[in-house]
Length: 301
Figure 1 (cartoon, one colour):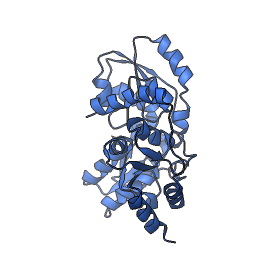
Figure 2 (cartoon, helix red, strand yellow; figure 1 turned 135 degrees about the vertical axis):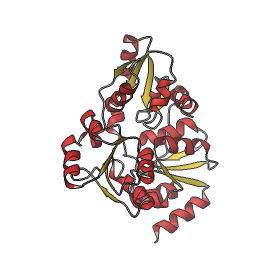
Figure 3 (cartoon, helix red, strand yellow; figure 1 turned 90 degrees about the horizontal axis):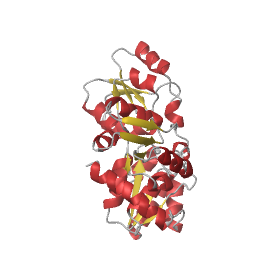
Figure 4 (cartoon, rainbow, N blue to C red; figure 1 turned 60 degrees about the vertical axis):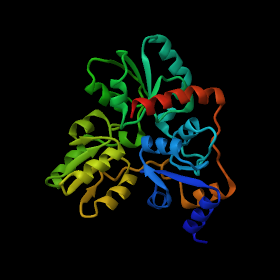
């Protein structure tokens, strides 16, 4: 059985769209109808005409699609693909923090649970966080769950007071500034592009900081020929496709997210065939979470 052909056949039969994050396996990105970062995929899920979405990513992404489009069926092929960062922010603890800072606006990174989104004023991604927080009148901002992205934004908006949650991405946290220094010593004229989920010393050592989509754009528009890519290595599939003549390196032994790599073609096939792993969200929570995501799309235009 040719899985690619069977998936395409099932997709057409069921009026489905396959969405994949840049961190997914190359074969998953190749079978997808749309590949992108969290913001782009959230937008695609909201605006697509198909009534069945197969979301090749992690749970918070599929949840976000369901929150925005409750009338659509959303399938997560790898049911156990979670996000440790999202799990670091518990709804009950967020409630306590909000009570301590009653005048603060709560901005949650899209890498968060539906429950946390339901307690937030606005959601954001790494590509639109700066724009969204700049558009908020209030001076006090609770930002969660990623401390590193929060720090990166806070450095650019000194007139606001940030209360940062102590969460992080386990994949980006592993990278140390020494790995970037080593790359510079080994490769003359290399440019370093890093994700804002990296820790401060790594961000400080980079030439460019941006979301996955922004990193791809930076590399593609640069006249440089060598790059160190400091984010999950799945993004190299799209980068190399767009820039076959350039050379790319990863820090240390590479950067691989175990959860993003849980989705295989057989999972996409089984999910479509059997309508497996449907995302279900409590309607009361969904309605509240919808407000934060809808605000993101409005303010992030």
